[in-house]
Image (tube, rainbow, N blue to C red; front, side, top):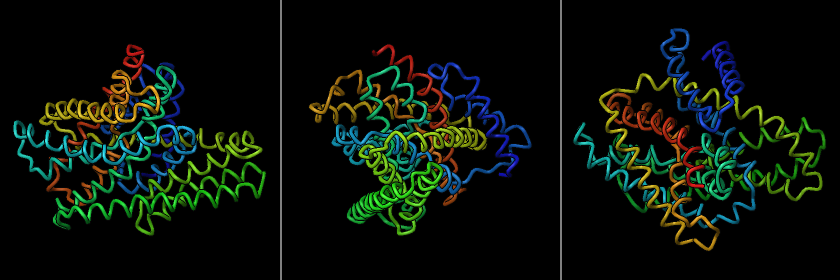
Length: 393
Protein backbone atom coordinates (compact mmCIF):
# COMPACT_ATOMS: atom_id res chain seq x y z
CA UNK A 1 0.00 0.00 0.00
CA UNK A 2 1.45 3.34 -1.07
CA UNK A 3 1.39 6.49 1.05
CA UNK A 4 -1.15 8.07 -1.32
CA UNK A 5 -3.45 5.07 -1.10
CA UNK A 6 -3.21 5.09 2.68
CA UNK A 7 -4.04 8.79 2.86
CA UNK A 8 -7.04 8.35 0.57
CA UNK A 9 -8.33 5.51 2.76
CA UNK A 10 -7.91 7.70 5.84
CA UNK A 11 -9.82 10.49 4.08
CA UNK A 12 -12.65 8.09 3.25
CA UNK A 13 -12.69 7.02 6.90
CA UNK A 14 -12.82 10.66 7.99
CA UNK A 15 -15.85 11.26 5.75
CA UNK A 16 -17.66 8.18 7.08
CA UNK A 17 -17.02 9.04 10.74
CA UNK A 18 -18.11 12.64 10.10
CA UNK A 19 -21.38 12.00 8.27
CA UNK A 20 -22.51 8.89 10.18
CA UNK A 21 -24.94 10.42 12.68
CA UNK A 22 -26.67 7.10 13.40
CA UNK A 23 -23.74 5.11 14.74
CA UNK A 24 -26.12 3.01 16.85
CA UNK A 25 -28.33 1.87 13.96
CA UNK A 26 -25.58 1.72 11.32
CA UNK A 27 -22.19 1.20 13.03
CA UNK A 28 -19.21 2.74 11.27
CA UNK A 29 -17.35 -0.59 10.74
CA UNK A 30 -20.25 -1.90 8.65
CA UNK A 31 -20.17 1.16 6.39
CA UNK A 32 -16.39 0.95 6.07
CA UNK A 33 -16.58 -2.75 5.22
CA UNK A 34 -19.17 -2.16 2.47
CA UNK A 35 -17.19 0.77 1.06
CA UNK A 36 -14.04 -1.37 1.10
CA UNK A 37 -15.79 -4.10 -0.88
CA UNK A 38 -16.83 -1.45 -3.40
CA UNK A 39 -13.27 -0.09 -3.59
CA UNK A 40 -11.99 -3.57 -4.45
CA UNK A 41 -13.57 -3.11 -7.88
CA UNK A 42 -11.70 0.17 -8.45
CA UNK A 43 -8.36 -0.63 -10.15
CA UNK A 44 -6.43 1.94 -8.11
CA UNK A 45 -7.45 0.32 -4.82
CA UNK A 46 -7.75 -3.31 -5.93
CA UNK A 47 -3.95 -3.52 -6.07
CA UNK A 48 -3.71 -2.96 -2.30
CA UNK A 49 -2.61 -6.11 -0.52
CA UNK A 50 -3.42 -6.57 3.15
CA UNK A 51 -1.05 -8.98 4.88
CA UNK A 52 -1.18 -10.66 8.26
CA UNK A 53 1.96 -8.74 9.26
CA UNK A 54 0.26 -5.40 8.57
CA UNK A 55 -2.64 -6.26 10.88
CA UNK A 56 -0.64 -8.00 13.58
CA UNK A 57 2.39 -5.74 13.87
CA UNK A 58 0.98 -2.31 13.04
CA UNK A 59 -2.78 -2.13 13.60
CA UNK A 60 -3.54 -4.63 16.34
CA UNK A 61 -1.16 -3.34 19.06
CA UNK A 62 -2.61 0.16 18.84
CA UNK A 63 -6.22 -1.02 19.03
CA UNK A 64 -5.46 -3.40 21.89
CA UNK A 65 -3.65 -0.70 23.86
CA UNK A 66 -6.51 1.77 23.52
CA UNK A 67 -9.01 -0.83 24.72
CA UNK A 68 -6.81 -1.87 27.64
CA UNK A 69 -5.88 1.69 28.62
CA UNK A 70 -9.54 2.71 28.70
CA UNK A 71 -10.64 -0.44 30.52
CA UNK A 72 -11.24 0.08 34.21
CA UNK A 73 -9.04 -1.92 36.61
CA UNK A 74 -12.11 -2.07 38.84
CA UNK A 75 -13.98 -3.90 36.05
CA UNK A 76 -11.13 -6.42 35.88
CA UNK A 77 -11.48 -7.16 39.59
CA UNK A 78 -15.26 -7.30 39.40
CA UNK A 79 -15.49 -9.66 36.43
CA UNK A 80 -12.17 -11.53 36.75
CA UNK A 81 -13.67 -15.05 37.18
CA UNK A 82 -16.06 -14.57 34.25
CA UNK A 83 -13.42 -13.04 31.96
CA UNK A 84 -10.80 -15.67 32.79
CA UNK A 85 -13.19 -18.58 32.21
CA UNK A 86 -14.71 -17.24 28.97
CA UNK A 87 -11.28 -16.36 27.56
CA UNK A 88 -9.65 -19.73 28.23
CA UNK A 89 -11.83 -22.80 28.79
CA UNK A 90 -14.75 -21.02 27.13
CA UNK A 91 -12.76 -20.39 23.95
CA UNK A 92 -11.50 -23.98 23.74
CA UNK A 93 -14.97 -25.43 24.35
CA UNK A 94 -16.50 -23.05 21.80
CA UNK A 95 -13.96 -24.10 19.19
CA UNK A 96 -14.57 -27.80 19.89
CA UNK A 97 -18.37 -27.58 19.69
CA UNK A 98 -18.30 -25.31 16.64
CA UNK A 99 -15.75 -27.56 14.94
CA UNK A 100 -18.00 -30.58 15.48
CA UNK A 101 -20.94 -28.65 14.02
CA UNK A 102 -18.97 -27.53 10.96
CA UNK A 103 -17.74 -31.07 10.38
CA UNK A 104 -21.29 -32.39 10.65
CA UNK A 105 -23.01 -29.95 8.26
CA UNK A 106 -20.19 -29.10 5.84
CA UNK A 107 -20.76 -32.40 4.03
CA UNK A 108 -24.02 -30.98 2.69
CA UNK A 109 -22.00 -28.41 0.75
CA UNK A 110 -18.35 -29.47 0.50
CA UNK A 111 -16.08 -32.17 1.84
CA UNK A 112 -14.29 -30.80 4.90
CA UNK A 113 -12.01 -32.88 7.11
CA UNK A 114 -12.41 -32.82 10.87
CA UNK A 115 -9.10 -30.96 11.21
CA UNK A 116 -10.25 -28.42 8.62
CA UNK A 117 -13.51 -27.92 10.50
CA UNK A 118 -11.61 -27.36 13.75
CA UNK A 119 -9.36 -24.86 11.99
CA UNK A 120 -12.41 -22.89 10.79
CA UNK A 121 -13.75 -22.93 14.36
CA UNK A 122 -10.46 -21.65 15.80
CA UNK A 123 -10.51 -18.78 13.31
CA UNK A 124 -14.03 -17.79 14.33
CA UNK A 125 -13.64 -17.97 18.14
CA UNK A 126 -11.95 -14.59 18.86
CA UNK A 127 -14.35 -11.68 19.24
CA UNK A 128 -14.00 -8.05 18.22
CA UNK A 129 -15.99 -5.53 20.31
CA UNK A 130 -15.30 -2.49 18.10
CA UNK A 131 -18.78 -2.44 16.60
CA UNK A 132 -20.59 -3.27 19.81
CA UNK A 133 -19.07 -1.81 22.98
CA UNK A 134 -19.79 1.86 22.38
CA UNK A 135 -23.42 1.02 21.60
CA UNK A 136 -23.73 -1.28 24.60
CA UNK A 137 -22.39 1.36 26.96
CA UNK A 138 -25.19 3.72 25.93
CA UNK A 139 -28.06 1.31 25.41
CA UNK A 140 -27.50 -1.61 27.78
CA UNK A 141 -26.31 -2.59 31.20
CA UNK A 142 -22.76 -1.30 31.66
CA UNK A 143 -21.70 -4.70 32.97
CA UNK A 144 -22.52 -6.29 29.61
CA UNK A 145 -20.18 -3.87 27.84
CA UNK A 146 -17.46 -4.53 30.42
CA UNK A 147 -17.66 -8.30 29.93
CA UNK A 148 -17.74 -8.08 26.12
CA UNK A 149 -14.81 -5.66 26.01
CA UNK A 150 -12.72 -7.44 28.64
CA UNK A 151 -13.24 -10.89 27.15
CA UNK A 152 -12.32 -9.75 23.65
CA UNK A 153 -8.99 -8.32 24.85
CA UNK A 154 -7.96 -11.52 26.60
CA UNK A 155 -9.36 -14.23 24.32
CA UNK A 156 -7.22 -13.12 21.37
CA UNK A 157 -4.16 -14.64 23.03
CA UNK A 158 -5.92 -17.97 23.60
CA UNK A 159 -7.23 -18.02 20.04
CA UNK A 160 -3.77 -17.50 18.55
CA UNK A 161 -2.32 -20.44 20.50
CA UNK A 162 -5.23 -22.69 19.52
CA UNK A 163 -5.01 -21.65 15.87
CA UNK A 164 -1.24 -22.10 15.75
CA UNK A 165 -1.49 -25.68 17.03
CA UNK A 166 -4.30 -26.63 14.63
CA UNK A 167 -2.68 -24.88 11.65
CA UNK A 168 0.57 -26.73 12.34
CA UNK A 169 -1.30 -30.02 12.36
CA UNK A 170 -3.17 -29.09 9.18
CA UNK A 171 0.04 -28.33 7.29
CA UNK A 172 1.83 -31.35 8.75
CA UNK A 173 4.31 -29.30 10.77
CA UNK A 174 3.29 -30.80 14.13
CA UNK A 175 1.23 -33.62 15.60
CA UNK A 176 -1.53 -33.58 18.19
CA UNK A 177 -0.16 -33.63 21.73
CA UNK A 178 -2.44 -32.41 24.52
CA UNK A 179 0.35 -31.84 27.03
CA UNK A 180 2.44 -30.02 24.43
CA UNK A 181 -0.56 -27.80 23.63
CA UNK A 182 -1.19 -27.14 27.33
CA UNK A 183 2.48 -26.33 27.90
CA UNK A 184 2.59 -23.96 24.92
CA UNK A 185 -0.63 -22.29 26.03
CA UNK A 186 0.57 -21.71 29.60
CA UNK A 187 4.00 -20.49 28.50
CA UNK A 188 2.70 -18.12 25.85
CA UNK A 189 -0.19 -16.79 27.94
CA UNK A 190 1.49 -16.41 31.33
CA UNK A 191 4.69 -15.19 29.71
CA UNK A 192 2.81 -12.52 27.78
CA UNK A 193 1.05 -11.27 30.91
CA UNK A 194 4.32 -11.19 32.90
CA UNK A 195 6.12 -9.24 30.16
CA UNK A 196 3.21 -6.81 29.87
CA UNK A 197 2.97 -6.23 33.62
CA UNK A 198 6.71 -5.63 33.96
CA UNK A 199 6.85 -3.42 30.87
CA UNK A 200 3.77 -1.49 31.91
CA UNK A 201 4.94 -1.06 35.50
CA UNK A 202 8.37 0.30 34.53
CA UNK A 203 6.96 2.67 31.93
CA UNK A 204 4.07 3.79 34.12
CA UNK A 205 6.61 4.88 36.73
CA UNK A 206 8.71 6.58 34.07
CA UNK A 207 5.72 8.67 32.98
CA UNK A 208 6.10 10.70 36.18
CA UNK A 209 9.63 11.78 35.26
CA UNK A 210 8.23 14.50 33.04
CA UNK A 211 4.99 16.43 33.28
CA UNK A 212 5.15 17.52 29.66
CA UNK A 213 2.11 15.94 27.93
CA UNK A 214 3.87 15.47 24.59
CA UNK A 215 6.55 13.29 26.15
CA UNK A 216 3.97 11.27 28.04
CA UNK A 217 2.24 10.53 24.74
CA UNK A 218 5.59 9.42 23.28
CA UNK A 219 6.03 7.03 26.20
CA UNK A 220 2.53 5.60 25.71
CA UNK A 221 3.45 4.71 22.10
CA UNK A 222 6.51 2.89 23.42
CA UNK A 223 4.32 1.03 25.93
CA UNK A 224 1.77 0.04 23.27
CA UNK A 225 4.17 -1.26 20.64
CA UNK A 226 7.21 -1.97 22.80
CA UNK A 227 5.38 -4.40 25.08
CA UNK A 228 3.88 -6.16 22.06
CA UNK A 229 7.10 -6.67 20.13
CA UNK A 230 9.18 -7.43 23.24
CA UNK A 231 6.80 -10.25 24.13
CA UNK A 232 6.73 -11.55 20.55
CA UNK A 233 10.53 -11.43 20.39
CA UNK A 234 10.90 -13.82 23.30
CA UNK A 235 8.15 -16.11 22.03
CA UNK A 236 5.21 -15.21 24.26
CA UNK A 237 1.90 -13.50 23.55
CA UNK A 238 2.30 -9.94 22.34
CA UNK A 239 -1.47 -9.54 22.49
CA UNK A 240 -1.60 -10.27 26.22
CA UNK A 241 1.58 -8.27 26.71
CA UNK A 242 0.03 -5.12 25.29
CA UNK A 243 -3.24 -5.65 27.13
CA UNK A 244 -1.44 -6.14 30.47
CA UNK A 245 0.77 -3.09 29.87
CA UNK A 246 -2.23 -0.91 29.01
CA UNK A 247 -4.12 -2.01 32.11
CA UNK A 248 -1.03 -1.36 34.26
CA UNK A 249 -0.80 2.17 32.89
CA UNK A 250 -4.49 2.74 33.59
CA UNK A 251 -4.02 1.42 37.13
CA UNK A 252 -1.09 3.76 37.72
CA UNK A 253 -3.07 6.75 36.49
CA UNK A 254 -5.92 5.85 38.82
CA UNK A 255 -3.50 6.22 41.72
CA UNK A 256 -1.69 9.32 40.49
CA UNK A 257 -2.25 12.75 41.99
CA UNK A 258 -2.50 14.32 38.55
CA UNK A 259 -4.65 11.67 36.91
CA UNK A 260 -6.77 14.10 34.90
CA UNK A 261 -3.67 15.78 33.51
CA UNK A 262 -2.20 12.47 32.39
CA UNK A 263 -5.39 11.07 30.88
CA UNK A 264 -6.25 14.27 29.04
CA UNK A 265 -2.93 14.24 27.18
CA UNK A 266 -3.08 10.56 26.26
CA UNK A 267 -6.76 10.56 25.35
CA UNK A 268 -6.24 13.53 23.03
CA UNK A 269 -3.73 11.47 21.04
CA UNK A 270 -5.23 7.97 21.16
CA UNK A 271 -8.76 9.20 20.47
CA UNK A 272 -7.41 10.25 17.06
CA UNK A 273 -5.29 7.14 16.50
CA UNK A 274 -8.10 4.69 17.26
CA UNK A 275 -10.61 5.79 14.57
CA UNK A 276 -7.74 6.17 12.11
CA UNK A 277 -6.66 2.57 12.65
CA UNK A 278 -10.27 1.40 12.55
CA UNK A 279 -10.88 3.20 9.27
CA UNK A 280 -7.83 1.59 7.71
CA UNK A 281 -8.45 -1.93 8.97
CA UNK A 282 -12.13 -2.19 8.01
CA UNK A 283 -11.60 -0.62 4.59
CA UNK A 284 -8.71 -3.02 4.02
CA UNK A 285 -10.82 -5.97 5.18
CA UNK A 286 -13.46 -4.98 2.65
CA UNK A 287 -10.89 -4.71 -0.14
CA UNK A 288 -9.27 -8.04 0.76
CA UNK A 289 -12.56 -9.86 1.28
CA UNK A 290 -13.77 -9.83 -2.32
CA UNK A 291 -11.18 -12.25 -3.65
CA UNK A 292 -12.06 -14.83 -0.98
CA UNK A 293 -15.84 -14.76 -1.18
CA UNK A 294 -17.70 -17.39 -3.17
CA UNK A 295 -21.46 -17.73 -3.62
CA UNK A 296 -21.10 -21.48 -3.09
CA UNK A 297 -20.43 -21.05 0.64
CA UNK A 298 -22.96 -18.44 1.76
CA UNK A 299 -25.50 -21.03 2.91
CA UNK A 300 -22.88 -22.88 4.94
CA UNK A 301 -21.55 -19.58 6.32
CA UNK A 302 -25.03 -18.59 7.50
CA UNK A 303 -25.48 -21.91 9.31
CA UNK A 304 -22.05 -21.57 10.94
CA UNK A 305 -22.85 -18.03 12.11
CA UNK A 306 -26.14 -19.12 13.70
CA UNK A 307 -24.43 -22.08 15.34
CA UNK A 308 -21.57 -19.94 16.64
CA UNK A 309 -24.02 -17.54 18.34
CA UNK A 310 -26.02 -20.43 19.81
CA UNK A 311 -22.92 -22.20 21.11
CA UNK A 312 -21.56 -18.97 22.55
CA UNK A 313 -24.92 -18.33 24.25
CA UNK A 314 -24.84 -21.79 25.84
CA UNK A 315 -21.30 -21.30 27.18
CA UNK A 316 -21.85 -17.69 28.34
CA UNK A 317 -25.07 -18.69 30.12
CA UNK A 318 -23.29 -21.56 31.85
CA UNK A 319 -20.35 -19.40 32.96
CA UNK A 320 -22.54 -16.55 34.20
CA UNK A 321 -24.71 -19.00 36.12
CA UNK A 322 -21.65 -20.43 37.87
CA UNK A 323 -20.37 -16.96 38.79
CA UNK A 324 -23.76 -15.34 39.34
CA UNK A 325 -22.71 -13.74 42.62
CA UNK A 326 -20.42 -11.40 40.65
CA UNK A 327 -23.25 -9.13 39.53
CA UNK A 328 -26.52 -9.23 37.59
CA UNK A 329 -25.10 -10.76 34.44
CA UNK A 330 -26.67 -14.12 35.14
CA UNK A 331 -29.93 -13.22 33.44
CA UNK A 332 -30.79 -14.93 30.17
CA UNK A 333 -31.31 -11.63 28.38
CA UNK A 334 -27.90 -10.31 29.31
CA UNK A 335 -26.25 -13.62 28.45
CA UNK A 336 -27.81 -13.47 24.99
CA UNK A 337 -26.66 -9.87 24.50
CA UNK A 338 -23.10 -10.81 25.50
CA UNK A 339 -23.30 -13.69 23.01
CA UNK A 340 -24.67 -11.56 20.17
CA UNK A 341 -22.05 -8.86 20.75
CA UNK A 342 -19.26 -11.41 20.21
CA UNK A 343 -18.63 -10.18 16.66
CA UNK A 344 -15.89 -11.68 14.48
CA UNK A 345 -13.50 -9.06 13.18
CA UNK A 346 -9.86 -8.02 13.09
CA UNK A 347 -8.31 -11.04 14.83
CA UNK A 348 -10.29 -13.52 12.72
CA UNK A 349 -9.10 -11.77 9.57
CA UNK A 350 -5.51 -11.94 10.81
CA UNK A 351 -5.86 -15.68 11.38
CA UNK A 352 -7.38 -16.13 7.91
CA UNK A 353 -4.48 -14.28 6.31
CA UNK A 354 -2.02 -16.29 8.41
CA UNK A 355 -3.54 -19.52 7.11
CA UNK A 356 -3.36 -18.17 3.56
CA UNK A 357 0.35 -17.47 4.04
CA UNK A 358 0.93 -21.00 5.35
CA UNK A 359 -1.18 -22.92 2.84
CA UNK A 360 -2.64 -20.72 0.08
CA UNK A 361 -3.81 -23.53 -2.20
CA UNK A 362 -4.77 -26.40 0.11
CA UNK A 363 -6.78 -24.17 2.44
CA UNK A 364 -8.62 -22.17 -0.23
CA UNK A 365 -12.06 -23.52 0.68
CA UNK A 366 -11.47 -22.98 4.41
CA UNK A 367 -10.44 -19.38 3.73
CA UNK A 368 -13.57 -18.68 1.69
CA UNK A 369 -15.89 -20.19 4.29
CA UNK A 370 -14.21 -18.32 7.15
CA UNK A 371 -14.20 -14.97 5.37
CA UNK A 372 -17.88 -15.39 4.48
CA UNK A 373 -18.76 -15.96 8.14
CA UNK A 374 -16.70 -12.92 9.22
CA UNK A 375 -18.51 -10.68 6.72
CA UNK A 376 -21.94 -11.95 7.82
CA UNK A 377 -20.99 -11.51 11.46
CA UNK A 378 -19.74 -7.96 10.97
CA UNK A 379 -22.86 -6.91 9.10
CA UNK A 380 -25.67 -8.84 10.83
CA UNK A 381 -24.44 -8.76 14.42
CA UNK A 382 -23.23 -5.15 14.26
CA UNK A 383 -26.55 -3.95 12.86
CA UNK A 384 -28.44 -5.98 15.44
CA UNK A 385 -26.63 -4.82 18.59
CA UNK A 386 -28.53 -1.56 19.12
CA UNK A 387 -32.10 -2.72 18.40
CA UNK A 388 -31.49 -5.94 20.32
CA UNK A 389 -30.09 -4.11 23.35
CA UNK A 390 -33.04 -1.70 23.37
CA UNK A 391 -35.53 -4.56 23.00
CA UNK A 392 -33.95 -6.60 25.79
CA UNK A 393 -33.77 -3.50 27.97
